[in-house]
Length: 479
Image (tube, rainbow, N blue to C red; front, side, top):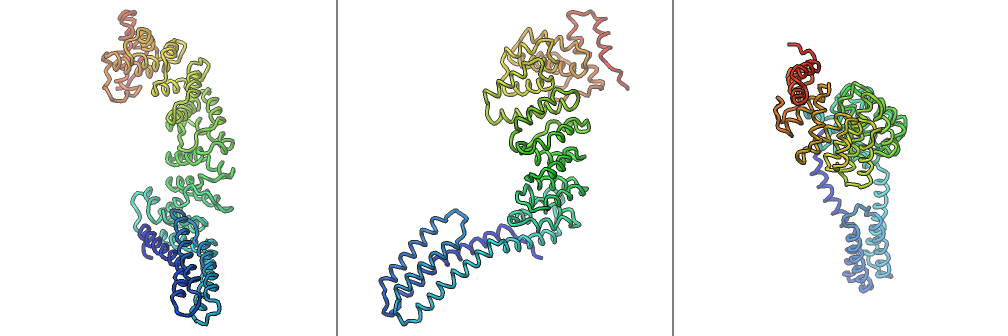
């Protein structure tokens, strides 16, 4: 089967279609013009008036339809019936053969156009074209080496556009032996809205059976607009798929519409956020509609829990609020975020995330920063406040808080403190500027820890006490 050239084929068909439509609209005027020019003794004035009227109506019809995809059938039928009336009035009593021929044309053509319109609206041509394109996809041999590129092929885009009537031609390819063909068929169904009963379940079974992560991800994306609860709940299980790509596709396909789906998703989302196997995934991000108030309330409650679920729920809320602030600074939202940040009873992970978010947007005022320096606040929160205050110049209270933080028996806090001391105060802590912090259990981390403890305690501890404290904070590192 020859390959289908999408752009050139569509351009050729569009040009031919416009020419045929223009010819159909002008044909009644041409027939009336010919009748008016024939020396048959009939009313030439009436036929000339009819010709002028047809040209005017045809022009108005073309102008009104410019730039719009409307069927030409009603306009054609109307013009032909009006032309038939003009011709009958203008040739009344004539013995010429031509008026009878023209009347036959003016009667038959509207019937043909009406029949063609009925056939088109039935979807038969679209189904035929979709089957042809599906066969072209199935018979293709030269597929891209990168499977992800299959969804961008011209044949796949053309197949997606041809599935407006039904998804059956693409669904028939889901059992094909080639993974490229299955992937192309699923890409053509991406975020499809109109499904017939049983079709979403077919795509879901493809996702459940597929061994290839790309196929599972494409099947999930195809079902992104399905609002059937059993299907949505089944898709929610893919939030814990072994493949990060599949988890990302499930997040995008499910969370874009939490207004209707959140009651069906909340338990699966809670299990996903609390699973230690996926703690490195960070926040749940999506590009659809913002999270609803119910979803935000649940995430805020989960942020108060201990362990992975609290951290990831806080990160997800941080991503949600960052998106909201990116779309426009709202005084109401800023007030709520500052209130949560200043609340000592709010979940610490959430407060830390809000502090970083507000700092990145320059929305942390000195009053809040001063309160965040207090020892009752979590260490990462105090570090954020110190960072913001020292960025504006020397600050004695921030320096004092930094000394306190450097004495804490926590290797991770010590490394973060050392990076801040070296960057803001210019004290060499053994870190390479611009490089990430060393692993916690590395020799470099142990050396940095000793340096930051020595810096913090040089003014209030003697050397022996400082060395003892450094030794206590430094776990045994194997050679």
